[in-house]
Image 1 (tube, one colour):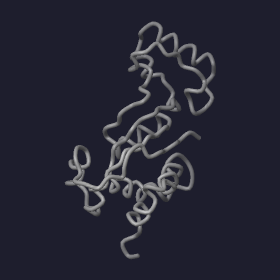
Image 2: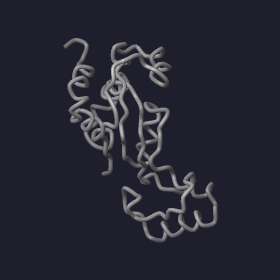
Image 3: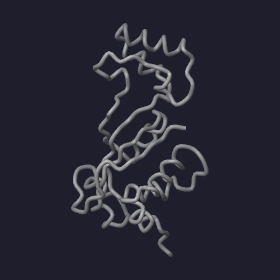
Image 4: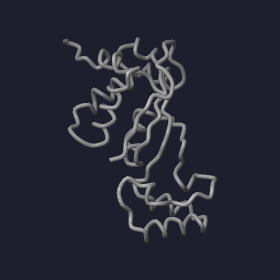
Length: 166
């Protein structure tokens, strides 16, 4: 399983801006957590990113999907979380060569690994922990565990996700 999370910048205390400010109005969480912003560097397969867009609506991509990339990069087996037959990779590269970006978009496996930066707040991370922290396996379990292990986030995160009756 591929899912890596690291702290890119933060946490920073201050008034929420951008995404955080917009989402603050629709949340019922701890308003102080909206003031703690951070940026996470995340490496995960496309299938995880599709679900994560609910929490991270704007992502700065280190690695865009191949049909959006401007470079001449070729797809290789290491670009995917799960083994992809060489014939499939050859077919996808042929689509790239032909400039058929729409067909590539439709046929790219969800196991394609992407790298992105997600700017967020501690309230969003606390919500992820509440909504996804109970998973026993998979990418969301790994994501929540890695958040808890980040030294700069762990202490705040444990307080933020403590049940209200604790």
